[in-house]
Length: 139
Image 1 (tube, rainbow, N blue to C red):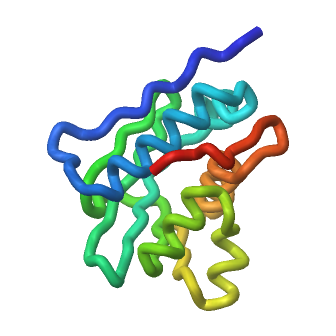
Image 2 (cartoon, rainbow, N blue to C red):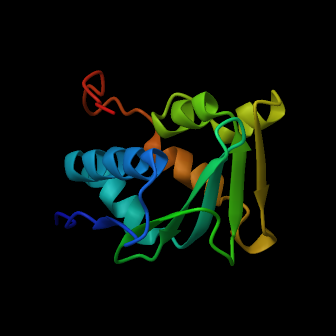
């Protein structure tokens, strides 16, 4: 049984380039891959992504029935990922694992104990898949 795509929407006040990039990646992946749609429906929690070198951040709010993207860090947060803009883009493109990048010192990853694995679940949702070719992924 096919899962309907999970709506990914920007909050009314979200206008940053990072918010639009995150939305574009999620919409594209969820439209293309059934497995990722099932993963997105099961995800719950808020994760902030902050680009320290660009002084910009977004919060992804996984609600099960939709994903909402906000500009800035919107409390309460379950997890946060901080790093350079390029490091965050690699993560969004599915080319970087947050745990590995954290151990290498390229990203700082924090989670509340209740949502300890939310950054890894985000990675699993975003990572490149062998089901199709993501070479055409546009920003």
